[in-house]
Length: 340
Image 1 (cartoon, rainbow, N blue to C red):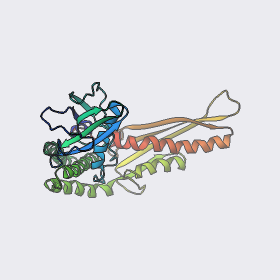
Image 2 (cartoon, one colour; image 1 turned 90 degrees about the vertical axis):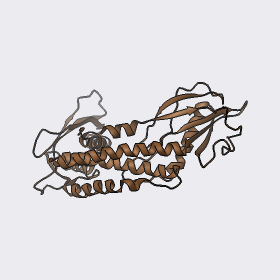
Image 3 (cartoon, rainbow, N blue to C red; image 1 turned 45 degrees about the vertical axis):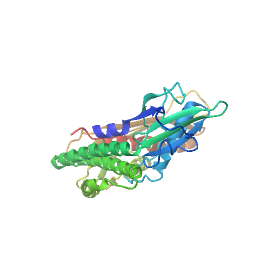
Image 4 (cartoon, rainbow, N blue to C red; image 1 turned 90 degrees about the horizontal axis):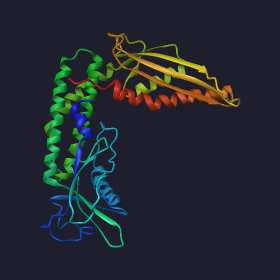
Protein backbone atom coordinates (compact mmCIF):
# COMPACT_ATOMS: atom_id res chain seq x y z
CA UNK A 1 0.00 0.00 0.00
CA UNK A 2 1.42 3.39 -0.96
CA UNK A 3 2.48 6.12 1.41
CA UNK A 4 -0.41 8.34 0.35
CA UNK A 5 -2.97 5.58 0.95
CA UNK A 6 -1.49 4.81 4.36
CA UNK A 7 -1.56 8.49 5.14
CA UNK A 8 -5.12 8.77 3.87
CA UNK A 9 -6.36 5.81 5.91
CA UNK A 10 -4.67 6.87 9.14
CA UNK A 11 -4.95 10.67 8.84
CA UNK A 12 -5.54 12.26 12.25
CA UNK A 13 -8.50 14.50 12.77
CA UNK A 14 -8.00 17.56 14.93
CA UNK A 15 -10.54 17.84 17.73
CA UNK A 16 -10.78 21.34 19.17
CA UNK A 17 -12.96 21.87 22.20
CA UNK A 18 -13.90 25.25 23.53
CA UNK A 19 -16.04 28.28 23.04
CA UNK A 20 -14.17 31.56 22.71
CA UNK A 21 -15.24 34.43 24.89
CA UNK A 22 -15.82 36.62 21.82
CA UNK A 23 -18.61 34.36 20.49
CA UNK A 24 -22.24 35.40 21.09
CA UNK A 25 -23.96 33.74 24.02
CA UNK A 26 -26.63 31.35 22.76
CA UNK A 27 -28.27 28.05 23.59
CA UNK A 28 -26.54 26.06 20.87
CA UNK A 29 -28.29 22.86 22.00
CA UNK A 30 -31.49 24.12 20.37
CA UNK A 31 -30.05 26.67 17.93
CA UNK A 32 -26.39 26.95 16.94
CA UNK A 33 -26.96 29.31 14.01
CA UNK A 34 -26.09 32.53 15.90
CA UNK A 35 -22.63 31.47 17.04
CA UNK A 36 -22.04 29.18 14.05
CA UNK A 37 -24.05 30.43 11.03
CA UNK A 38 -24.83 27.83 8.37
CA UNK A 39 -23.08 29.78 5.61
CA UNK A 40 -19.79 29.28 7.49
CA UNK A 41 -20.36 26.09 9.49
CA UNK A 42 -21.93 22.64 9.31
CA UNK A 43 -22.92 21.56 12.82
CA UNK A 44 -24.57 18.72 14.72
CA UNK A 45 -25.51 18.29 18.38
CA UNK A 46 -25.12 15.13 20.46
CA UNK A 47 -26.18 14.20 23.95
CA UNK A 48 -25.44 11.37 26.35
CA UNK A 49 -25.18 10.22 29.91
CA UNK A 50 -21.43 10.93 29.95
CA UNK A 51 -19.30 13.65 28.32
CA UNK A 52 -17.71 11.04 26.06
CA UNK A 53 -21.11 9.73 24.93
CA UNK A 54 -22.15 13.26 24.00
CA UNK A 55 -18.95 13.82 22.04
CA UNK A 56 -19.28 10.53 20.19
CA UNK A 57 -22.92 11.19 19.35
CA UNK A 58 -22.27 14.72 18.09
CA UNK A 59 -19.50 13.56 15.74
CA UNK A 60 -21.57 10.59 14.61
CA UNK A 61 -24.51 12.90 13.83
CA UNK A 62 -22.18 15.18 11.90
CA UNK A 63 -20.88 12.27 9.84
CA UNK A 64 -24.43 11.25 8.90
CA UNK A 65 -24.90 14.55 7.11
CA UNK A 66 -22.12 13.48 4.77
CA UNK A 67 -22.86 9.77 4.70
CA UNK A 68 -26.19 10.30 2.96
CA UNK A 69 -24.46 11.84 -0.04
CA UNK A 70 -21.33 9.71 -0.27
CA UNK A 71 -21.25 7.20 -3.11
CA UNK A 72 -18.27 5.60 -4.80
CA UNK A 73 -18.26 2.16 -6.38
CA UNK A 74 -14.53 1.95 -5.76
CA UNK A 75 -14.76 2.09 -1.98
CA UNK A 76 -16.10 -1.12 -0.49
CA UNK A 77 -16.53 0.17 3.05
CA UNK A 78 -18.28 3.51 3.29
CA UNK A 79 -19.33 3.35 6.94
CA UNK A 80 -18.48 6.38 9.04
CA UNK A 81 -17.40 5.14 12.45
CA UNK A 82 -17.69 7.42 15.42
CA UNK A 83 -14.67 9.65 15.91
CA UNK A 84 -13.57 8.98 19.46
CA UNK A 85 -11.78 11.36 21.79
CA UNK A 86 -10.53 9.17 24.65
CA UNK A 87 -8.48 11.54 26.76
CA UNK A 88 -10.95 14.28 27.69
CA UNK A 89 -11.35 14.99 31.38
CA UNK A 90 -12.90 18.46 31.75
CA UNK A 91 -16.25 19.32 30.21
CA UNK A 92 -16.90 22.81 31.42
CA UNK A 93 -18.22 24.85 28.50
CA UNK A 94 -15.43 27.41 28.83
CA UNK A 95 -12.63 24.83 28.91
CA UNK A 96 -10.61 23.99 25.80
CA UNK A 97 -8.07 21.44 24.68
CA UNK A 98 -6.74 19.76 21.55
CA UNK A 99 -6.80 16.04 20.97
CA UNK A 100 -5.68 14.02 17.98
CA UNK A 101 -8.20 11.37 17.04
CA UNK A 102 -7.65 8.47 14.68
CA UNK A 103 -10.42 7.82 12.21
CA UNK A 104 -11.07 4.10 11.88
CA UNK A 105 -12.98 4.03 8.59
CA UNK A 106 -12.26 3.56 4.92
CA UNK A 107 -13.36 7.09 4.08
CA UNK A 108 -13.03 9.62 6.85
CA UNK A 109 -14.51 12.99 7.59
CA UNK A 110 -11.64 15.49 7.61
CA UNK A 111 -11.28 18.48 9.91
CA UNK A 112 -14.13 17.59 12.33
CA UNK A 113 -14.24 19.74 15.47
CA UNK A 114 -15.96 19.69 18.81
CA UNK A 115 -16.99 23.34 19.10
CA UNK A 116 -18.55 23.33 22.56
CA UNK A 117 -19.57 21.05 25.43
CA UNK A 118 -21.74 21.54 28.50
CA UNK A 119 -24.04 19.82 30.95
CA UNK A 120 -27.10 20.73 32.95
CA UNK A 121 -27.33 20.23 36.69
CA UNK A 122 -29.53 17.15 36.60
CA UNK A 123 -29.75 16.38 32.89
CA UNK A 124 -27.51 14.86 30.21
CA UNK A 125 -24.25 16.11 28.74
CA UNK A 126 -24.26 17.94 25.39
CA UNK A 127 -21.66 18.44 22.67
CA UNK A 128 -21.64 20.47 19.46
CA UNK A 129 -19.59 19.15 16.51
CA UNK A 130 -18.86 21.15 13.39
CA UNK A 131 -16.83 21.88 10.28
CA UNK A 132 -15.76 25.33 9.16
CA UNK A 133 -16.68 25.42 5.47
CA UNK A 134 -13.86 27.62 4.12
CA UNK A 135 -11.13 25.98 6.19
CA UNK A 136 -12.38 22.46 5.46
CA UNK A 137 -12.63 23.11 1.74
CA UNK A 138 -8.93 23.99 1.75
CA UNK A 139 -8.10 20.85 3.80
CA UNK A 140 -9.97 18.64 1.34
CA UNK A 141 -8.39 20.38 -1.64
CA UNK A 142 -4.89 19.78 -0.26
CA UNK A 143 -5.65 16.12 0.47
CA UNK A 144 -7.06 15.54 -3.02
CA UNK A 145 -4.01 17.20 -4.54
CA UNK A 146 -1.69 14.81 -2.67
CA UNK A 147 -3.69 11.80 -3.84
CA UNK A 148 -3.60 13.02 -7.45
CA UNK A 149 0.17 13.48 -7.27
CA UNK A 150 0.56 9.91 -6.04
CA UNK A 151 -1.62 8.54 -8.85
CA UNK A 152 0.36 10.41 -11.49
CA UNK A 153 3.56 8.86 -10.16
CA UNK A 154 2.02 5.39 -10.25
CA UNK A 155 0.79 5.88 -13.83
CA UNK A 156 4.36 6.71 -14.79
CA UNK A 157 5.64 3.61 -12.97
CA UNK A 158 2.95 1.52 -14.66
CA UNK A 159 4.21 2.55 -18.09
CA UNK A 160 7.69 1.29 -17.22
CA UNK A 161 6.53 -1.99 -15.65
CA UNK A 162 6.68 -5.16 -17.76
CA UNK A 163 5.39 -7.87 -15.42
CA UNK A 164 1.57 -8.26 -15.77
CA UNK A 165 0.99 -9.02 -12.10
CA UNK A 166 3.01 -6.02 -10.96
CA UNK A 167 0.94 -3.94 -13.38
CA UNK A 168 -2.17 -5.32 -11.67
CA UNK A 169 -0.84 -4.39 -8.25
CA UNK A 170 -0.19 -0.83 -9.40
CA UNK A 171 -3.64 -0.52 -10.94
CA UNK A 172 -5.31 -1.81 -7.78
CA UNK A 173 -3.54 0.85 -5.76
CA UNK A 174 -4.42 3.59 -8.25
CA UNK A 175 -8.04 2.43 -8.33
CA UNK A 176 -8.27 2.65 -4.53
CA UNK A 177 -6.82 6.15 -4.62
CA UNK A 178 -9.31 7.22 -7.28
CA UNK A 179 -12.02 5.97 -4.96
CA UNK A 180 -10.66 8.14 -2.15
CA UNK A 181 -10.50 11.08 -4.54
CA UNK A 182 -14.13 10.63 -5.55
CA UNK A 183 -15.24 10.13 -1.95
CA UNK A 184 -13.47 13.24 -0.68
CA UNK A 185 -14.94 15.21 -3.57
CA UNK A 186 -18.44 14.13 -2.49
CA UNK A 187 -17.76 15.47 0.99
CA UNK A 188 -16.21 18.64 -0.35
CA UNK A 189 -19.29 19.23 -2.49
CA UNK A 190 -21.45 19.37 0.66
CA UNK A 191 -18.99 21.65 2.44
CA UNK A 192 -18.78 24.10 -0.48
CA UNK A 193 -22.54 24.06 -1.21
CA UNK A 194 -22.43 22.15 -4.45
CA UNK A 195 -19.16 23.37 -5.93
CA UNK A 196 -17.08 20.50 -7.29
CA UNK A 197 -13.36 20.25 -7.92
CA UNK A 198 -13.39 16.72 -9.32
CA UNK A 199 -13.39 18.06 -12.88
CA UNK A 200 -9.75 18.93 -12.24
CA UNK A 201 -9.04 15.20 -12.03
CA UNK A 202 -11.32 13.86 -14.77
CA UNK A 203 -8.41 12.95 -17.04
CA UNK A 204 -6.73 11.15 -14.15
CA UNK A 205 -9.88 9.12 -13.51
CA UNK A 206 -10.14 8.26 -17.21
CA UNK A 207 -6.50 7.15 -17.35
CA UNK A 208 -6.94 4.74 -14.43
CA UNK A 209 -10.21 3.39 -15.85
CA UNK A 210 -8.54 2.81 -19.22
CA UNK A 211 -5.79 0.82 -17.51
CA UNK A 212 -8.43 -1.29 -15.78
CA UNK A 213 -10.20 -2.08 -19.04
CA UNK A 214 -6.94 -3.43 -20.44
CA UNK A 215 -5.97 -5.42 -17.35
CA UNK A 216 -9.24 -7.10 -16.40
CA UNK A 217 -9.30 -9.57 -19.33
CA UNK A 218 -5.73 -10.58 -18.42
CA UNK A 219 -6.62 -11.58 -14.83
CA UNK A 220 -6.67 -15.32 -15.51
CA UNK A 221 -5.77 -18.21 -13.20
CA UNK A 222 -4.31 -21.68 -13.55
CA UNK A 223 -4.66 -24.07 -10.59
CA UNK A 224 -2.22 -26.91 -9.88
CA UNK A 225 -3.63 -29.33 -7.29
CA UNK A 226 -4.65 -32.84 -6.36
CA UNK A 227 -7.10 -31.51 -3.78
CA UNK A 228 -10.76 -32.57 -3.91
CA UNK A 229 -13.06 -30.53 -6.14
CA UNK A 230 -14.75 -29.03 -3.08
CA UNK A 231 -11.46 -27.47 -1.96
CA UNK A 232 -10.49 -26.37 -5.46
CA UNK A 233 -13.89 -24.83 -6.19
CA UNK A 234 -13.99 -22.98 -2.86
CA UNK A 235 -10.57 -21.48 -3.56
CA UNK A 236 -11.41 -20.45 -7.12
CA UNK A 237 -14.64 -18.83 -5.94
CA UNK A 238 -12.73 -16.49 -3.63
CA UNK A 239 -10.38 -15.36 -6.39
CA UNK A 240 -13.24 -14.76 -8.78
CA UNK A 241 -14.84 -12.45 -6.21
CA UNK A 242 -11.89 -10.05 -6.54
CA UNK A 243 -11.86 -10.12 -10.33
CA UNK A 244 -9.80 -13.14 -11.40
CA UNK A 245 -11.10 -15.69 -13.89
CA UNK A 246 -10.24 -19.39 -13.72
CA UNK A 247 -9.33 -20.47 -17.24
CA UNK A 248 -7.28 -23.68 -17.49
CA UNK A 249 -7.09 -23.29 -21.27
CA UNK A 250 -5.38 -19.91 -21.41
CA UNK A 251 -1.77 -20.07 -22.53
CA UNK A 252 -0.69 -16.99 -20.60
CA UNK A 253 -2.23 -16.92 -17.11
CA UNK A 254 -1.44 -13.94 -14.93
CA UNK A 255 -1.23 -16.13 -11.83
CA UNK A 256 -0.73 -19.82 -11.02
CA UNK A 257 -2.07 -21.30 -7.78
CA UNK A 258 -0.19 -24.32 -6.47
CA UNK A 259 -2.62 -25.81 -3.92
CA UNK A 260 -1.89 -28.56 -1.41
CA UNK A 261 -4.49 -30.08 0.91
CA UNK A 262 -3.93 -32.49 3.79
CA UNK A 263 -6.29 -34.12 6.21
CA UNK A 264 -5.82 -36.77 8.87
CA UNK A 265 -7.88 -38.29 11.63
CA UNK A 266 -6.95 -36.65 14.90
CA UNK A 267 -5.94 -38.67 17.93
CA UNK A 268 -8.23 -37.48 20.69
CA UNK A 269 -9.26 -38.96 23.99
CA UNK A 270 -12.97 -38.37 23.54
CA UNK A 271 -14.90 -41.57 22.79
CA UNK A 272 -18.03 -39.74 21.64
CA UNK A 273 -16.49 -37.72 18.80
CA UNK A 274 -14.28 -38.01 15.71
CA UNK A 275 -12.03 -35.16 14.60
CA UNK A 276 -10.02 -34.43 11.45
CA UNK A 277 -6.97 -32.19 11.31
CA UNK A 278 -6.65 -30.41 7.99
CA UNK A 279 -4.63 -27.70 6.28
CA UNK A 280 -4.58 -25.89 2.94
CA UNK A 281 -1.55 -24.15 1.46
CA UNK A 282 -1.73 -21.93 -1.64
CA UNK A 283 1.51 -20.91 -3.31
CA UNK A 284 1.05 -17.98 -5.67
CA UNK A 285 3.34 -18.41 -8.63
CA UNK A 286 4.28 -16.02 -11.37
CA UNK A 287 4.45 -17.95 -14.67
CA UNK A 288 7.80 -16.29 -15.34
CA UNK A 289 9.19 -16.79 -11.81
CA UNK A 290 7.90 -19.78 -9.87
CA UNK A 291 8.83 -18.44 -6.41
CA UNK A 292 7.75 -14.85 -6.73
CA UNK A 293 4.68 -14.34 -4.52
CA UNK A 294 3.45 -14.93 -0.99
CA UNK A 295 2.00 -18.17 0.39
CA UNK A 296 -1.39 -18.51 2.06
CA UNK A 297 -1.98 -21.19 4.71
CA UNK A 298 -5.02 -22.09 6.78
CA UNK A 299 -5.38 -25.02 9.18
CA UNK A 300 -8.08 -26.20 11.53
CA UNK A 301 -9.72 -29.19 13.22
CA UNK A 302 -13.24 -30.33 12.38
CA UNK A 303 -15.30 -32.98 14.13
CA UNK A 304 -18.63 -34.45 15.12
CA UNK A 305 -20.15 -37.48 16.84
CA UNK A 306 -19.86 -39.79 13.82
CA UNK A 307 -17.37 -40.09 10.97
CA UNK A 308 -20.01 -39.18 8.37
CA UNK A 309 -21.00 -36.06 10.29
CA UNK A 310 -17.36 -35.20 10.95
CA UNK A 311 -16.58 -35.27 7.21
CA UNK A 312 -19.64 -33.13 6.51
CA UNK A 313 -18.45 -30.66 9.13
CA UNK A 314 -14.99 -30.74 7.56
CA UNK A 315 -16.44 -29.68 4.20
CA UNK A 316 -18.37 -26.82 5.81
CA UNK A 317 -15.37 -25.65 7.82
CA UNK A 318 -13.14 -25.58 4.73
CA UNK A 319 -15.54 -23.27 2.89
CA UNK A 320 -16.09 -21.11 5.96
CA UNK A 321 -12.42 -20.67 6.82
CA UNK A 322 -11.44 -19.89 3.23
CA UNK A 323 -14.21 -17.30 3.02
CA UNK A 324 -13.07 -15.74 6.29
CA UNK A 325 -9.35 -15.61 5.54
CA UNK A 326 -8.58 -15.75 1.82
CA UNK A 327 -10.22 -12.56 0.44
CA UNK A 328 -8.40 -10.39 2.98
CA UNK A 329 -5.11 -12.10 2.15
CA UNK A 330 -5.62 -11.48 -1.57
CA UNK A 331 -6.47 -7.81 -1.13
CA UNK A 332 -4.00 -6.81 1.60
CA UNK A 333 -1.01 -9.05 0.90
CA UNK A 334 -1.06 -10.61 -2.54
CA UNK A 335 -2.23 -7.47 -4.35
CA UNK A 336 -0.40 -5.01 -2.15
CA UNK A 337 2.26 -3.39 -4.29
CA UNK A 338 5.73 -2.33 -3.29
CA UNK A 339 6.79 1.31 -3.38
CA UNK A 340 7.71 2.59 -6.84
